Length: 249
Image (tube, rainbow, N blue to C red; front, side, top):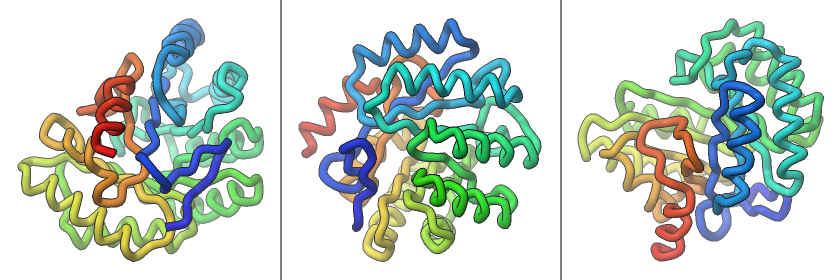
């Protein structure tokens, strides 16, 4: 696997990197969340634009991202607008979604841009190309908050992400049984042996929590931990997560 290196953080090499979602409804909450981050052990900030009350104001979102960048100039910054159909907090049109991603890429404020695999295909591919033009890494992703797809579907989606040029490939699923967690981990291992770039996988909720802790044993390069507010079911406190990952080695 070829690591993705951003601000001296090697994603895909060594221990899994801890990404902390930055969740805020307004500027005041953002500033409070940034203060909490100062006391948190993490490697990557995930800026969750969809949680802002003004999530559909692209200029406002870009301004808040700039505040975050200024607060943590030396940390890799992942920009995410999770649409409602993939478990996000704010519904939006395809037009706004891709216009926002383009604005953020051109601002050069984010190091990594999150793009949903199942958004409109030609726009996804154009956004990947634009990001690479601006030396921004791309994280192509898919989320299923209802169930765990089949082994073939999970591996197929991850391979498609790599084929489309994603620098990092991510899938998150919801288990209905322990067997579903095993399916996710099997898919993680299988794909890690095939593609040459970092992958991120997780089985959500309490049942899937083990995948956030031991995913690296199967090939997952990043795990998401909470600093204050969680952005997905089953997220573990980032400081505790760091200790556990160190023990597991």
